[in-house]
Image: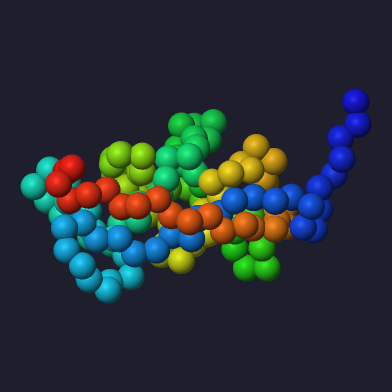
Length: 128
């Protein structure tokens, strides 16, 4: 069986640009705030669960598209799940382009052609 080596922009992935989210009120801060069991976690990122996997040691990881459209691997610290998202405390930043489709073929160091996908609507404050 022959395998074709993907290079340049042959590999297409869907990315989600991580941005600002605030629960319960509007503000313009660069990172999300999540209310968690009568406490507020500040400076966290909501990452869709489909963009986060686990490595051989069970640590949560993500692939992001960095400078020059090169794939980077990140180890994450996850606080908890919130709906279809993970509340990430370390490893991702606002503005990161998280790969959410095409993970099977994307590898760290590969050059990809990212196709930005619209973010899902935020969870309503009433559903907390």
